[in-house]
Amino acid sequence: MRRVARVAALVIAGFAALAGGSGPVRAAEGLVLDKIVAVVGDEIILLSQLDTLVASSPLLQEALQKYGRNPTQQQVEMATREARTQALDELIDQQLIKKEAQRFQISITDADVDRYLQQIAQENGFRTPSSCARRSSRAASTATGPTTCRTPRTSCSCTRPPARWRTRR
Image (cartoon, rainbow, N blue to C red; front, top):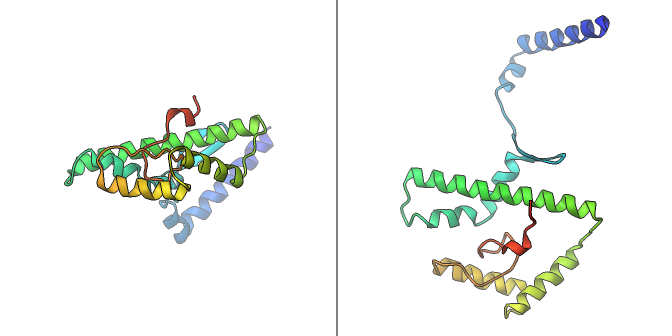
C-alpha cells in the first residue's frame, strides 16, 4: 500500500514539474474547451450541445418576442436564460427518450419518422411536412400568436410540441 502511495506521489510531482516549467502547457491551463451542463444516467450534455440547440432553434427568438422591438440588456439576458433552460430541458428529454427506447429495444428509422411526419401534415391539411413548415414560418414571421402547425420538429418555427409528444420524468 505504501509503495502505491509513493508511486502516485512521484507521478503527481512529475506532472507538476512538467506543467510548472513549460510555457505552452501553463498558457493552455486557463483555456476551457467545453463544460458539462447536465448528466442523464451515464450520458453527459455539453455546453456546446446546448449552445448549438439554442442557436439553431427558434427558442431565443420566441423568448425575445415577449419584450417587443427594443428589449433592454436585462430583458435579453432573461430571454437567453429562458431559452437555454428550455433547450436544456429538450436535450434532457431527448436523452431520456433515447434511454427508454434502448431499454425497450425500440428502434426507429428515418423512414418511420418521415411517414409519421407525413401523417401529421396530412391530418393538419398539408400535403407534405415541408409545406407545413413553410406555412408556419410565414405565419410566425407575421403573427404574434402561435401557429396551428403541429409538426414535431425543432426546426419548424411552430410553438413547442404538445405535451403528448414528450415523456414524463
